Image (tube, rainbow, N blue to C red; front, side, top):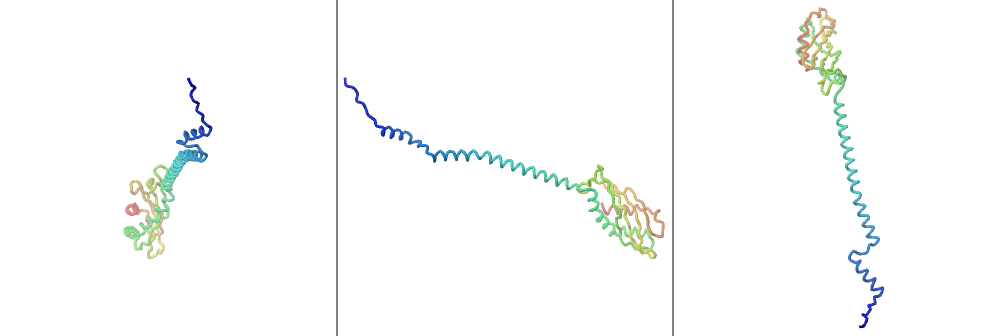
Length: 204
């Protein structure tokens, strides 16, 4: 029985077969490895970018809330601020009122009413704090000293001062008191109720 014939394969043929096996996947060159690494790196950045955007949004949200909170606190004006704003408006209403003019001229014989001014104004709050509220809703009581200016045949620079107390929540007159005047007649006995009611109707 003869021996089988031996097949001789050269190293060139081995290398060619080996290259053919790797061909479908292709050899991993330096460029392909770098490309794969870059892809992985880019994919890895997305979680960090998302986290950064989320953090920025959160910071902006906190800033908006803080700003709104500050604005609402700032809107609660102080009593002094409320008085400074209301006082000239009240004085203008009283001074230009035909009803007040008639009352003063009826109380003072033979005088001509000129104007009125609020010489003093005080306010008490509901909760005892120094805040009047946004539109004065925390004001419980208001006291004003009104000076009425008039001119008579003898007294050219006449004035009469009367103090009025108002329940600001109930919008009604609580009390009135004559203070002083340079009129020739006794005004302490005058009932200033009607004048006080008229003023209350003007300013509330």
